[in-house]
Amino acid sequence: MIKGLALLAFCFLIGMWCGALLGTWLGIDANVGGVGFAMIFLLFSKEYVTRKGAWNEEFAFGLGFWNKLYIPIVIAMAASLNVKSALSSGILALLAGILPVFIAFGLVRILLKKATTTK
Amino acid sequence: MKELEVILDKNGLIVAFLFVGLLTWATDLISKKVLNGRVPGSALAIGLGLVLGYLGGLFTEGENGLADLSYFRGLTVLGGSLFRDFAIVATATGASFLLIRKSGLLGLVSLVLGIGLFFFLGASLAWVMGYRDVVSLCTIGAGACTYIVGPVTGGALGASSEVIALSIGTGVVKTIAVTIFTPMMAKWIGLDSPGAAMAYGGIMGTSSGVAAGLAATDPQLVPYGSVTATFYTGLGCLICPSLFYLVLSTLLG
Image (cartoon, rainbow over all chains, first blue to last red; front, side):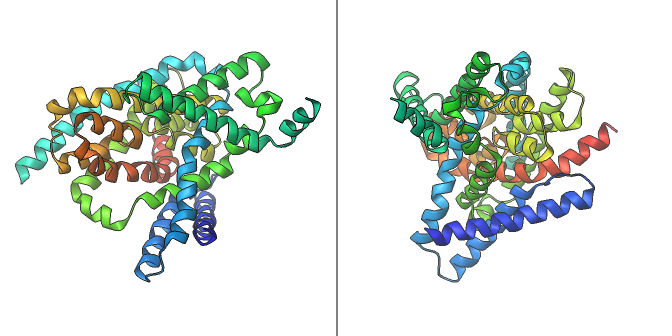
């Protein structure tokens, strides 16, 4: 368990560091894409450990626990936000949530047509 | 009773675990029994979380939703940026290079197109509705991708609690829309093969919506759509607060 957790912690810290460096480089006082970098590092590390033949239940459990915890965390976050003032823009959430989905359906159709004709 | 109050007050984070657990249990039950799995339990739970956040704000006149009630203070810890970012990184374990290779060029093209489409449509709609600052536009655009990319982007760029709530709400609406409309549109878009499911997963992104939508269309396609949908959130978390933020700031001067 702790091995997977440590691997996750390592990738998280290195990724956040990259995000902070990128933020400084861009001149904005923010962590830019640290989470994304960390995910890429984790992907590479997992691949490396697997290739070395050292990947086992120990690793998988430590990572899997946090993987599963993310939806509960989003629920907790949703319940502790300033939803009341956001409600005045509730129409926007509906529009921006539904409208692009329909355009995306059209895009899938076009893309799949293209893919089958090029084949 | 006095003792219990002290215990609850002292162990905020543990109370938050219990609270979220009970809420998830209840929404899973509703999703299965009442809605026949038509709406993913996770989307329902996050939606209910937003409703409770609203009620909390109504009662306390505060800005932290339900967490302004003293017993629920722990929600700000569990739902805070540290736990959130750490857990999101762990979701990358669902992906592997083998799967990336499997999804191929079509998968990659659909991912990039999908994230770009949802982000810029979301940001444009926010602009039309009167938002003008780049951070808010970027956060709402990211929320139109998924309810994870929204708060990650908003957190990184320092968006307000209100805008982050809006981005989560947008993402939840999207998940539900994808779930409900996929079985209806499946035939029209040509969603009938593993390759098609991968392209569809890459464009739509929201993994719980894609999985539930495909399950209602053809359960055999679920793993294929999930392959690309898993990358969507990761890639979105990477490029929304960086590349897309820069593009937006350049566009808006």
